[in-house]
Length: 491
Ligand SMILES: [Cu+2]
Image (tube, rainbow, N blue to C red; front, side):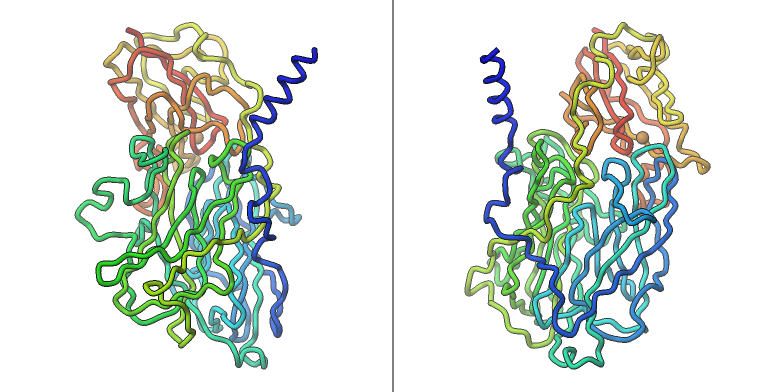
């Protein structure tokens, strides 16, 4: 009895990760929430956005909700809420991204980390009512029930007519993106590309990441400027983004935006906040300097598909001082912009809710075509019983072919077949399941959409690799992680 209790305590102690402890430098989030002198706080909301079952598409709509007079935006705090003001759980509805385009330039952005941009005193994004504002958003429905949400953004605004505006320096956003120039700027962070310590740095660790094309992660400064703020955007698995500058063949690091995870399972979910530089951080860049953004992912536990590494910079060409990064070290420790968000509380990975497919009898041997319909893998789904619930069997060297019948305009639900480690049958949450199968395979998002602009693979059919060793392979849908299944390779 005592031994069992001791073991339980020990197990808990071992499970308690360092990341769940207090933020190490014991600083409160850098965004104090205090209103700057002369500023007013205004909350806008965009919507209603009607989310269809399983939705995972990108939309662009005009934005009319904004100030009527010119001025400066000094703080920007995004959220995704239901009509009653509550925030949906991240394992149910997830804000893949919201990008506020101002005069067609990405200016403000939010992902599920919901970083708060709060500029140093005296700086503001210049706003005029003449600007064209567009909302580019991708809200992803992880379940099969429709929903209705609003994107909200709270801004601190100093009208140009107020005395406080006289002392303001205007900034604009310089978008830095590891896949810059793409409408859907993603890359895969795969275990096979791991560099040191199970970490993968994009694009550095991926041979020929950009083929013969330009280095998408770089930007050559077209004027002298001062960077006053930056915060990284990553996906689950992401550890940090960092910004470098190159001048006369010498490269220095300007800032590292780290992901601080509250997620008990480690760097595997959206339960994280990114760090921003201290308010005194200002970096002077010369025309011709080459800036570059890099993304570091932890690929020791799983592979990560359709990942991002973005680092928007708030810059000004007005005289604003700042440190010459080639004369002094500027990569100072950052501070998270907010604390843990309760919508990230369903981690998953609890007691098994589905059968262990390694113990289930063989399914059909000859018919190796699996149709996916109404969010169910037609053969070998963990949610089916009897014969349909048994894994289809192929001989070594053969493939199982999947067809997504939900990829019709009327349904338009993308699905994937993504390897996860057997039995892959625990409860669904933001940290479970993961793409951690013994062999990496992933179908991409089977379905159709405007090419290059959505996650769609623009095919509805995919076959498993033919070189899989004998065994039972479990998989899940990255888009709808409650969907799980298995197939078997016989010797
Ligand atoms: Cu799916």
